[in-house]
Length: 310
Image (cartoon, rainbow, N blue to C red):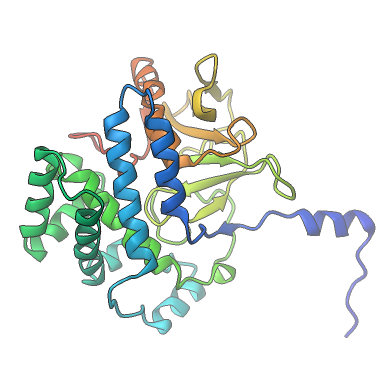
C-alpha cells in the first residue's frame, strides 16, 4: 500500500509537533541541587534552600546507584498503556515496598551529605528512620492525597523527597511512546499526580511550548497555553508576577476556579530549574494567597501544613 504524500506545510507541522511526554534527564537532581545552592545566596530562605540542595544531592546519589528494588512487572505496564491508565499509578505503587527501600537508601545518602545536620532536622530524620512500614505508608498516602494535616510537618519535605526519588526511579521503566496523548490532560499521564509548575520552553523545535511538570515523578507533558490546567477555562486568565519577575516565574491565575499554577519562563531564566525556582519564589505565593487564589498542588519539598488540595 502506498503512503500519502505530505505537502510542504504538512511536513513542517509534523516535524515541529511537540512530543506529548518528556522524561527528565538522568542528572535532574544534581542540576536542582546546583540551582538551589545558587538561589540560596542572599535569599531570605537561604538556609532552607541550602538544606534542600543537600536533599537533592542525596536523591541523585541513590538514583545513580539504587538499592536492589524489583522491576515493575512488564505485564502491568503494558496493561496500563493498553487501557490508557497511568503506568505508575500512585494508589497502586504506594503499596509497593520498593519506595520504602529507596527511602532508607536516601536516608543513608543524606547522612553522607550532612553528617551533622541541625538538631530539628536530625530529630525529624530519626523519627522517619524509626517509623515502621505501616506508619510510613500512612504518611505517604496522606501526603500524596493532599491531607497535609495528617503528616508531621517536620517530616513532610523528607517524605516528599523520598517519594519523588522512588517515582523518578520507576519512571526510568516507562516507555513514553506508549502513553497516548489526550487533550486537556490535567494530571500526569505517567503517575496521575498534579502538576507543580508549568515550564515555557525557549528552544526550537518547542520554543514557546508549555509543559506541565509532575509534582511526583518529574515527567513533563504538553499542555496548551492560555488555558487553566485545573478547570480548563480560557476566560481572562491573569498572569501575575513581580515587576522584575524573579527567577523567571509568573503565576497563571484563573478567575473562574480561583486557583493558580506558577510558570517558569526559560527565555527569562535560561538556566532555571522549575522546582528550585518555585521554592525560591514563595513570596509570589504569599501575594496570590492575599488575593484569594489557592495553589492547586504543593511543592513536595515544602508542604503547607493543614491544607488540602482544592
